[in-house]
Amino acid sequence: MRAIEEYDLFKKAHELNVKLAGMIEKRDREKSFLITEALRSGTGINIALIEGAYTGKGHFRPALDRAFAKGAGVRYFINLMKESSLLDDKEGKTLEEEAVNICKMISGLRNKIDEESKNEG
Image (cartoon, rainbow, N blue to C red; front, side):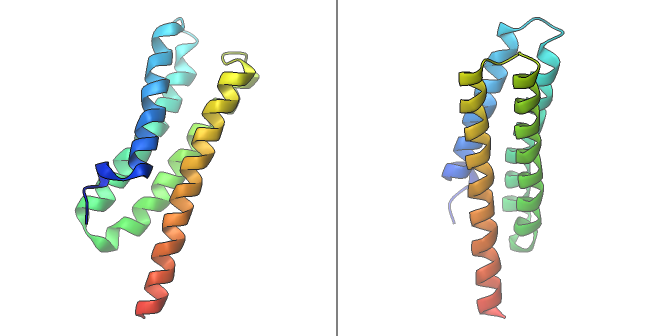
C-alpha cells in the first residue's frame, strides 16, 4: 500500500487547507476566526486519514467516519462565511464544491471498504 499522503483524497484535502490558510492573511483578525475554524476542520480530515492509515487496517474505516465529519464541518464553515459576506459567491461556491467532492471521495472509499468487508466475511 502506498503512503496515505500519495492518495488523491489526501492531496485534495491538503490543497483545500492551503487555500484556507492563505485566506487568513487576507482578512482582518475578527474575520479570520471562521477561516481558522474551517482550517481546523480541514486539517482534521488529513489527520484522521494519517491516523487511520498508520494505526492499522481495522482503524482505517472509523478514521474515514471522522474524516467525513470533519469535511462536513468545513462545508458548514464555508457556508457560514458565505452568509456573513466573508466570501464572495464565486469563491464560496468553489470552496464548497471542493469540500463536497472531498466528502464524496471519503464516502466512496468507505463504501469500497464496506463492500470488501462483506465479501471477506
